[in-house]
Length: 135
Image 1 (cartoon, rainbow, N blue to C red):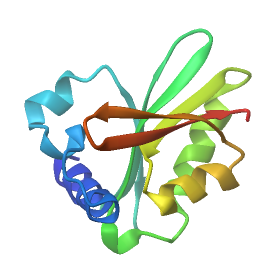
Image 2 (cartoon, rainbow, N blue to C red):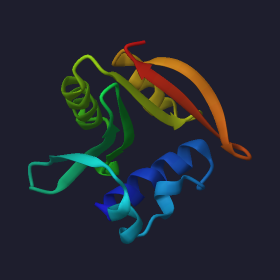
Image 3 (tube, rainbow, N blue to C red):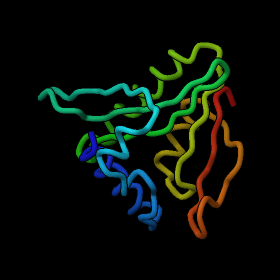
Image 4 (tube, rainbow, N blue to C red):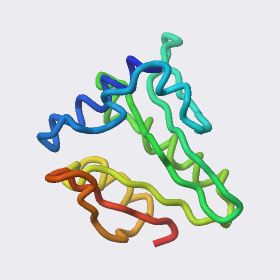
């Protein structure tokens, strides 16, 4: 899982031209310490092709991570994983954040019905775009 996460966030870092994405620099211990629920998708060879992680309360589901193996990108894996989180969320609000300049991720969320809720500069020069579903 850690290798998949690092590979996926390396792609985002290249897209947004900034490698200060916190999950890109996590250790295995850091990853295991996160209070996340995970769902994975396997490829035809039985390898982990993608995963989504979230935190939830009675009112809201926060999609914390969506990672897809770079060679498996653009095959609907991320879409399927997010749709499953939406199904599990029921009537609760679902929120997600991504790099402001990560056009592929932003397009995915917007096509799934997420609406923008603002942008935040989390550290100097690193901007994220926030989304919510329903929009």
